[in-house]
Amino acid sequence: MSDSVFMKSIQALIAIPLLTMIQMAAAQSGCSQGFINPHRLYLHNEAKASVTPLSLAAGEPLGTVMYKARKDSQLSSLDDYLGKFCTTGFLVLHKGQVVFEKYQQGVRPDDMLLSASMSKTILSLIMGVAIAEGKLALNDRVQDILPDFKDSAFADNTIEELLCMTTGVELKNSYVRGETSDNQATNPMISPRQNMRSYLSQKKGLAAAGKRFDYNGAVSALLGLTLSARTGKSNTDYLAEKIWQPMGAKSNGYWIKNNNGEEGVQGQFAATLSDYAKLGYLVMNQGAINGKQLIPASWIAHMTTLRRDLPQSSGPPYYGLHVWIPQAAGGRSFFWGTNGQNIFVDPIAQVVIVHTGNSPNAEFHGNDHLFPLRDAIVTKLSSR
Image 1: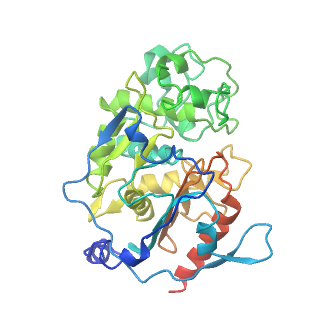
Image 2 (image 1 turned 30 degrees about the vertical axis):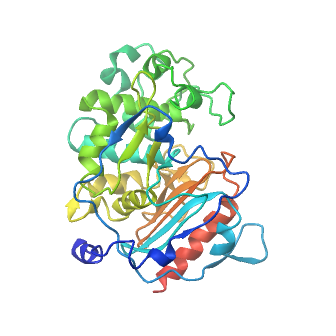
């Protein structure tokens, strides 16, 4: 779909024709509240909303969707799914129009929902802009950007190795509260007094860089430090200038930071469901929205290309440049965070699905349902 056609479809506000589709549901028992409006509790930087926000128009309602969960012999519906798991928001875009939108757990359309590791892909988008502007290069080494890392295990890592999670640095990844791990030590919501830069510059324990895939939020934290060093701005300000405001964000976005002002780019971004959908649309539309090319199309293609020549997760899904890639690649990708956060992007079917959750467990207990449900939605919309 061309930008001109997309823009014509954007003119109506969500609230008018779509109001009947925005259903509010009571909170389910056992769900966490820590993923809703975290900016009210933690220090943060603020990406100001656009002065000319983009309103997503309503399309033909999605209607009934049936799917078969993994290891389940019976069909379930989208409504069944939403009544069973700790989902806070569910939004579906088709050809740039909202065909389904629902909020649960008392969440409202203007509430901020924590991204978890979807934040890593947001970081990758602004990394692509910085690379296009010549501020960074994929073969730049960490110690050349951050001289105090010359004795760190990360010293000779390239920006590309950081983006691919193939640093070779020995790191521990754990989501168990209270357990010592590098991802928690660099998380400003868990370790607000930690100095990320000092902590990471002292890391030792080097294996062969580029030889194995080892996913850890601490690597993203280091990427954020390199980006800020080269732009001379906070990552929040750079996001606001290059993407958030130009794409027409309707609400502010928030990056939680620690007491030293270091942002949790690895997982602590918060935004509304509809603004997450715009980020998904940006990726689906090769970096363009609202008649503007905000991110180079070449970067979107590069970050979402399945590289089988590089170390990968045992997958599927596989890993691109700070974005997840399903087995059926072809440009498809998704932002993926713990406890139920996803933005599924399918440029072939022109579908974006945003799912936010507040599961009490890092491994979202609805994943065996959510991924088949995603495929069923895509299949249904592809037939239109």
